[in-house]
Length: 481
Image (tube, rainbow, N blue to C red; front, side, top):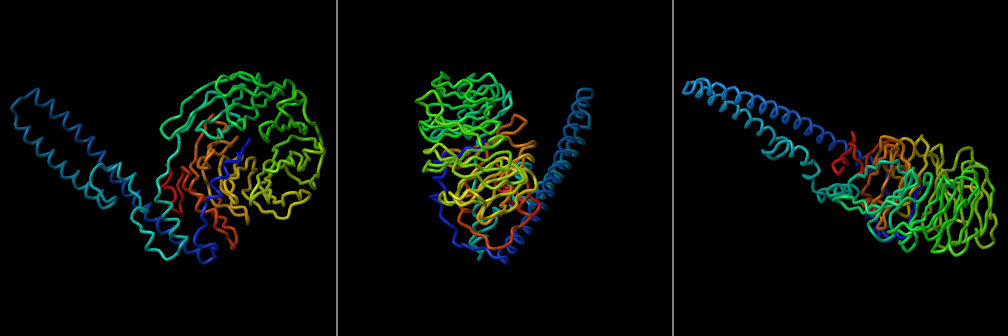
């Protein structure tokens, strides 16, 4: 399940809005035209570079074959005039290679080490943002020139079911279908497995760090909730059969309180200082997909698979309000705009916006991708990362609703994701046992931009700088790594 530590909002509060607050239709058309021109130049250069590289490789193979034949002839007939003939042939091939190097120089700007230059040379490197009058175009060019770094992928033996970043260290917890929790220390150079803790007898459904970062809180299909030591794995608290049904999700409210929801719609609140739950309430009949609270910690908002959003009052231990039913599963949600707005995603790819505290019916709605959305991760006060069954990770500007583009992608459905404590990385996992990191720091520059034009449908397939794939109509792919 996606988790958003409170510290993850630090970056969004420090963001500086762009020099222009509004992008009109003409600006967007101008940006798209510039991106299209640059994309065509990039594609032409790549094609020419690949052709030249193939030609050099073919000539090298021919030269190696010729050298081998010449060597054999010298062993049989030493002193033969064939030696001079071979030398002349080598000179001809050298001149051909030099010609190809000259071609490469025209394509990529540097003569030697052709294949490496084709990959490293970028059209964007030749552009000076100061030559542009439009501030939006300047911002895009500056962003594309910045180097991006991220940790390498993690491949796990067992299927990962959840991810959680440590609140103040470069540590990632990975829960698995076998009931284990793996602890990694990540960096841009390597990821190191620190500990493997065998905690549950069945699949771990959700794993979180305690507020102080010294403990792990995990919930499982075996219906138990465990608080364990981060380093030793020793149990600090164990609620066996915490629910009558498998637990689907948990949320850490503070250093003492934990909320949990199960597959059949029961929500419980736990205090780590007591054995029994603070309360146990059941107002829906389907799984609890997400439990959300704000910094005031007065209300628990619970989305569920039967299309209802139910809010509980923590102090009074009873239901506060329940929304009108929706004809789709409510699968995820997040808080935005200084905790004044709640946005909920659905199995039909729709998004519903509520004023915080007014959860009976949404006050705004918009459609995202046509495929189901199962994960939402707030990364700034206006932007969220979403993912689901199609394996594509997208950025959404939620006020108003607009798809910014593709952050990254997996070959299979995205199962879970989380954001690092500094707000610079997100990690995602998929059904192929692959955990990937994406550098999303560039969203700092886009958070303050507001849009007054109609959503651009092309953005649903537009790859942002963190993506590993190339666009046909833009040059963001130059920052894939």
